Image (cartoon, rainbow, N blue to C red; front, top):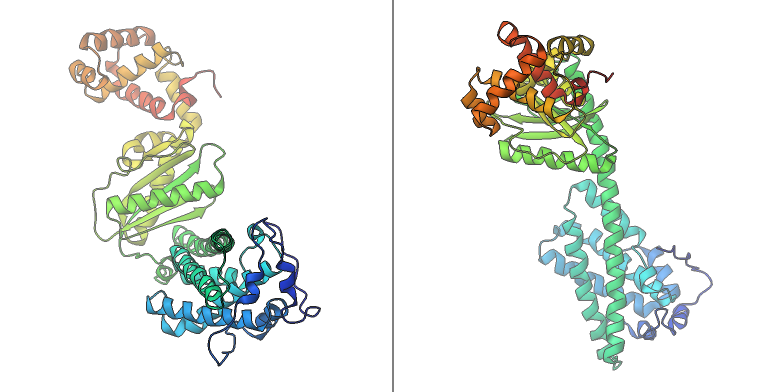
Length: 452
């Protein structure tokens, strides 16, 4: 959006700038209608937006148009107050903001600027930041501005009719179109100011809460940390860690993690939740008033580009540390797999512990599965069939049911596996099962004997 030129408040006599609006900058009707605006009441109230703002506008619009804007702003604010859009004690501030925005738009129109170039006033942007700091929903901006726009449109057309200056239908539509464009630009600019302020606030708030989490993980048991975290520490805690598996932009990552955390909180019945940065990870933290049976992996679907790992549910401050430590262990499996997904400690704990020493794990897998490692489809099928076969206690029928193949196919693959291995499964079935689970969860990183 082009930056408007600063107003010269000294060179123009009151109302002189209106002559510059004679040719409409967007190619439609002229803007002489600005000169026909005037107040209705005998008493002309002092501008709520301040003398400086009013004097800048008077230098361009003249006294009558400014006083008209002051009256309309007061009427708009009374309407909003009656509708409960803000408390009565905030009426003066609201009137000042409405008035400043109305004068800003009219002044820019009088200077001949195209409607699409007229954005929000500085006062409107500061109001948006204030609403962000107060935690008011962004929908509040839309509600207030568009309802204000409706009243201003009606007031302009009613005023022109009252002074016998009715516009042609085409000119009336152009006036409304200009005002609508200005309000649309204001909504856009205020929304962006609101979003930026919320981002700053969240960053500051997250940093403070992340510091409290770090203190707990480092061994602190100070009950005052609860105030900084705004989470109950005498509760049950479920912590997860998240990482990116590709170049996911920071803003998109945080937005997706907030969505996942909110969905988990809602579906699992958490009493509190937060997403916090911690080193290479983001931490998802949920609290529960009582111990629950939680199935994280069954609740969420992870978008491409993200990996998640969760610990178990544990109680009190010590439970925060335990759940986080378990999440870190589970993340070893996900990081080694190098793909998007969700890993939970209760499902991968054995593999996670085995991967605590990756060099030893690689040597163990290579020794136990020598002859059946590799990335081709046949080797994958053999490993997966035997993994499931061992997991169900050596039942061909149950393995066939889970794999959706025939029992004879299970028997054939088990025999092939043993032939390639060069030994029967029975003497070392536990070690073979663990090696197969490690390869299954770690993916190609350990299945390829030639990969470093």
